[in-house]
Amino acid sequence: MSFDVDVAVRRGEAEIACRFATGSGLTVLFGPSGAGKTTVLNMVAGLVTPDRGHVRVRDMTLFDSERQIDVPTELRCVGYVFQDARLFPHLRVAANLRYGRRIVATARQVGFSEKSLGLGEAEVLALLGIGDLLDRWPRSLSGGEARRVAIGRALLSDPAFLLLDEPLSSLDSARREEIMLLIERLRDAIRLPILLVTHDRGEAERLGSRIVEIEQEPVSEGPR
Amino acid sequence: MNADTWGPETWGVVLLSLKVGAAAMAATLPLAFALAYLLARARFPGRLLVDALVHLPLVVPPVVTGWVLLLAFAPHGPFGLFSQWVLFRWTGAAIAAGVMALPLMVRAIRLSIEAVDRRLEQAARTLGARRWRVFATITLPLSLPGVLAAAVLGFARALGEFGATITFVSNVPGETETLPLAIYAALQLPGGDARVLGLSLISVALSFVALVASELLARRAGRGLHVL
Image 1: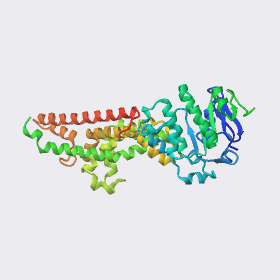
Image 2: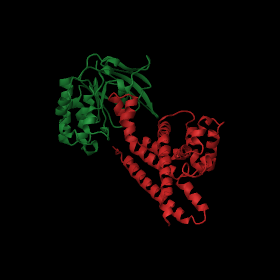
Image 3: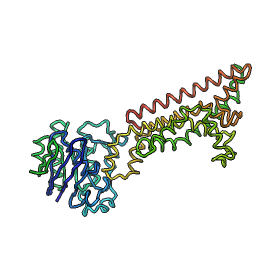
Image 4: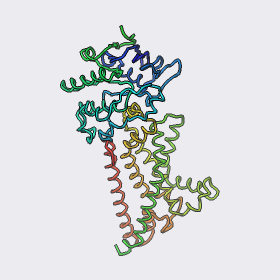
């Protein structure tokens, strides 16, 4: 089982709730903007604490309100690519990419059994075509370049799973195609569990092994 | 202006002022940073009280601040142990200047910490960084320009400190007589006008340079740039 998620959190008047359990491959969280898709990702990453429910990834329990388990974000071995790349502005691209090199102990602490990726730095640079950007500052990158660096930074932290928040938004069509191919490669060749958020049905249908729809209001009940 | 105005005595006053200002700033900076971080990030009962206490020297008459320091460091006061190293000494002048500079420094540092994008700290955490590493590699470097601006501002404020200093450690030439105290002393003397003018010009020049430096650093901070 890749993702086994059943979470709910109150946000003002509305409740964001979501439940799905998926096998290997890429799971798409699909829904209109404002439906709380990013909040669901944040709950899987541990940046938002659900009011109740559980989060299990690759059979590891990261959160369980009943058993009072809440693994801190930094120990979840998550590769999170934010919609706004969130590159560190005071570090060059190379330092950004290397920021997340994990101490092997981290993964053991949580208990993800075998390390997943085994992707070397050279491999990631080639895969993403960002070898020429290493000496640049983040503010000098175009949107597409920043997105690819953010993906590279997440991959190089040797994550156990990937969270991609609208990875194709605000890219021109050539770049979209490139990133789309890359995601397909990660999905098929590296077989990394991926949770991807999008509001674009075409994207969802092309990439998703499984599509979970999140409705605007107030509660959505997982796959249907 | 006669030769005396620019004589060794004047430069002694300037050097002493710089020494007192630098010591006050260096000693206050860590405390100011800790307080600023606490006020910017922590939620605890009594936060408002800490905030008010920190800002007190900004609004209380400096004479009162000086008098409180005098009570605190008097031989039988709570810090009486240190009285011989502090009373009528340049170190006492630095303490008075530091206390008076503290609110300004806390304010400036707090703003720069609050300006750090917390989403970057979140990103660092997803990459496996624990709290201290997030602080050392993200929060601190990104707030550093503001911290340096605060340091320069605190230094400038310390250079100008008068009321608390003269109350606390009085005016001892060569030991506690900083620029403002020397100017005040010269004003009391008949024919001291030239000296007043000379010392005032130096004061204004030093303050101006410090303010410009502080402003330039703060602008860097505002644009999310980094100093080093």
